[in-house]
Image (cartoon, rainbow, N blue to C red; front, side, top):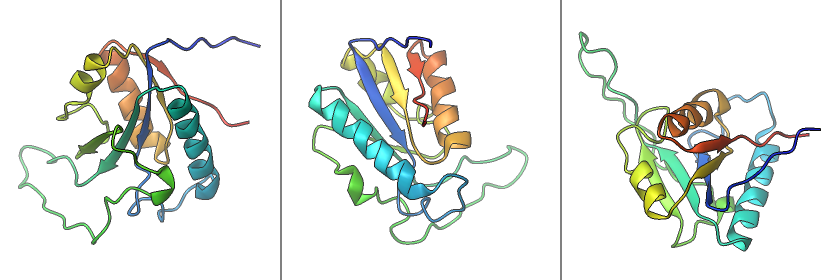
Length: 149
């Protein structure tokens, strides 16, 4: 069995666990995803490691040769799930693209905390989690994705 090491300066990034996304169709039962993410959040908090909660409040502008689309999101769409138990010390990032690093200050906030590695877990694994993982790698962070048994 492979051994995974965790850097001492690791942050947990949890994209897209918000009211407007959890009702979308999902392969994995969303309650399992929420419970596992909350367990990770609790573990990171117990060890005093940074938590990054990411919500999405819009979309990328789209193609340049087409007019910009403005889509109104329903009331409360971007509200984080209360189960995440957001704390004042948590980093909150609001994104408008699939990944949490584009057009946000996430890289700077992580660097200011001395973070060298990120662990990602969330609901939209094919978009929000994967895009953020790729962007984190491109910014020089070690990246870990927990797997579910």
